[in-house]
Image (cartoon, each protein chain N blue to C red):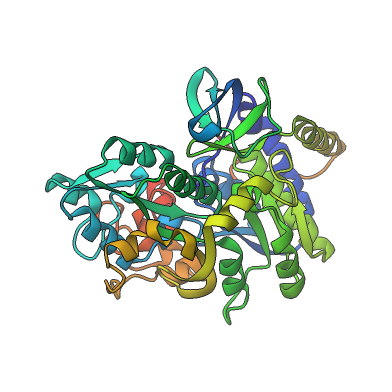
Length: 92
Length: 362
């Protein structure tokens, strides 16, 4: 229900009543999306889209910084942290 | 796809699972309150890869599941009216009311249509001025900006044949209802990333302080979830309370300000019954008096519809996390996704339906 999918803005135009609308590409699948709630987003930016509305602009710096934290965690693991219980199956 | 694929990397996920195993020195129970997260946890098998000491319970995170039976009966009563088009998101159509579901009413000849966005329902109202077009507005805070915009746009366009049947629910009051219950065993929360994308997380801070729990705003991909669980375990081990943000690529503390502004212009907070739980004070949204012309409950006088739940369903215990779906005597026998007895089995995002689908029967 609260599904939000990240996509890249390809086009911005004025919709009904001057409301900002645009074309957003989700890995090549294009949809018309309301951009009224992300006035800061421009062409080329990634937005999270829910039921035809962009609800946030993806902050790429924050995404990079979270990934860096994660990879630092990996380096610690290589120094000898124990493995968890479970079947160890690769997810998704 | 960027911002999707890199969050499904098996090596990274295992690395974080390993860190959770190293961090968890005592048993901990946390809850997620988002049907999308329930789904990801079971589909990716994360629930089975967590150390035994870390339990993730699935809370009332599915708006379709917590929509009360009488609200579905109201939608059915409206759909059966002549010259009416009832529109909804697809997952609402097969949720049974007291007697039938919307899909059967459609098969009987009623005009029931699935829309992708509430703006599609507004377009239908423009295209069919001789019909009443009603949108069944079910959802958490995530969906409220879309529904607020639909009402606002209908108002701007001067449409008199558009209305919504609002069944909006709010997450923080449900968290408080769970934390404040006598049999509560939840020690930390994963807060739903898209609810917080819209609303921010300021209102979670007093909850974390009052109930002395960590709350970690968490995204939806498998890597987001294991990271959110890791951050919660670390906070629990350190005895730290407060709100942390794992999903910082989408969530800011103040949320989406223009979206919150329009929600506040169109909707006001009200008491709302949750299926399987009961009335939670100040846990829903209804249209403000200035927009009551768009309120389908008033327009079609269906406020007095009432309904009775199956006495066999223990939805309340499931949604509060005190009982697991497989511990219910009806699970998988008398209660299945095809013939659900109650809330958590009705939608693919409900905890019972997810357990059934992914074979978590033993």
